[in-house]
Image 1 (tube, helix red, strand yellow):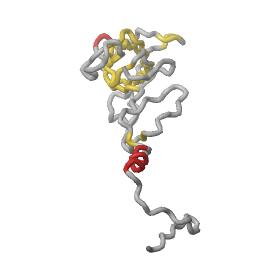
Image 2 (cartoon, one colour):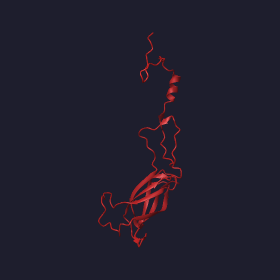
Image 3 (cartoon, rainbow, N blue to C red):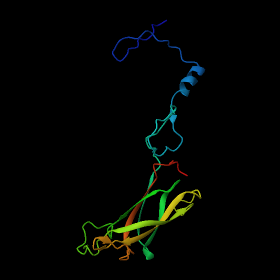
Image 4 (cartoon, one colour):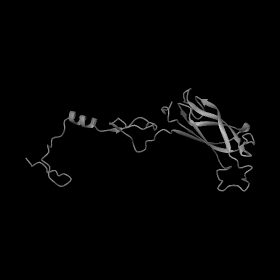
Length: 190
């Protein structure tokens, strides 16, 4: 009978002889069952305060992605100084809205010469209605989910130190809207 092979540790010291018998099926199954496997569910969105996960038998794969907590939309103000926004994701609670006016063209790299104090006043806005339930962009959204909004937008104009919110039409103004999931309520996707 040949001698058992010598096994060395990382420092080059010999270990005691190891048994060379193959594991039994039961031993193999027990070992295989303890090896973590790829996760088979979508990762959770970020949560207020964070949390340590408790699933020790699953791991995230390299190409996993977390659901978005925001929706960003670019559009143009329509007749009546309004804008109908369709979100790119559904929200379980009324989201926060961040509106920004954009240059007239996505190719604009410098302020136009006519951008003077008379016409360069910022626009201001307010949400006048929410869209709930399925939309063309979100056909499977639940009926109670927030899936869009309508904004009313005005050009602010100074009148001796105060803004005249009804001063000028903003039809054709380009804008960006970011809808953000609130951190004071659950962000589980509806």
